[in-house]
Amino acid sequence: MIDWASTAFVFPGQGAQKVGMGADLVQAYPEAQATFALADEVLGFALSDLCFNGPENELNDTFNTQPALYVMGIALLRVLNAAVEDELRPAFVAGHSLGELTALTAAGALSFTDGVKLVRERGRLMKAATERSPGAMAAVLGLDADTVRDLCAEASQQTGQPLVLANDNCPGQLVISGDTATLELALPLASERGAKRVVPLAVTVASHSPLMESIAGDFRAALETVSFTKPAIPVIGNVTAAPLESEDDIRAELGAQLTSTVRWTESVQAMQQQGITTFIELGPTDVLSGLIKRIDRTTQRITLSDAAQVAEFLAGPG
Image (cartoon, rainbow, N blue to C red; front, top):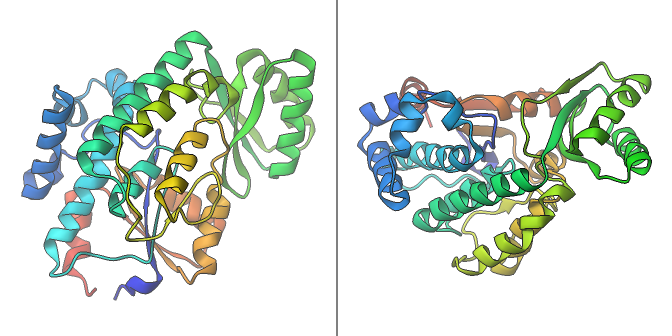
């Protein structure tokens, strides 16, 4: 049985997408069909067809990936809410990077229509920043955050270009982001300091790095066109690893998030400190469930990514 007072919903960011996402959900649940249909209408193109059928390279374009993951998360949430008498009320919600906007909608702080438009604009701007200043990202396995920050600073000092800790995903799995040449200089430094593996990522978007600063102003302007309200459910922010309690908190968080480290380890720990023991991931894959397992293996982790998993969850006690 799910104890909602000790449960959090979590929503993934880029990298969780896959062709076919949402297709069986739409066939099984009218709420999912309506969610994808509304997104298609708002965006003016068939995002649903891209999610269900690809092609993969277009789905992986950040301009499309961001709304795709946002809509998928909300479709799953609406299916769950429609299946129970009272709307599900987890004690907390959180999202990784892009997923933070999905979490804000789940918490009632951002309307779905505004959210779809905002994530599409976020994707457009990030793509534009990449075209101006291509960058790179790499996963560093087996080092602590302080060591990774130090080696990024050392490499940056040598080139004069930025390289930073972008994602603190879980103990032993960190992601660095920034200037391509500086990142290439940092890879052997990481190995010298004892990294188990260093894996360049197949991206050109240097997310959560100073290379996103060129579009930060435009995104803050976009945020000013959107209405936010106080979250009905506490939302843990990526930048602060603390609850976003007001409209001002949300705007400051989302404006800073593009160039700031995603403090996912600390975010999960902050929820645990408030009594959260169960994490339910709403998205196409179980990427966050895997990270949470590495943060604390004693947590209960449930992934809801397709119609079969949703049906099994709804059929159980809870």
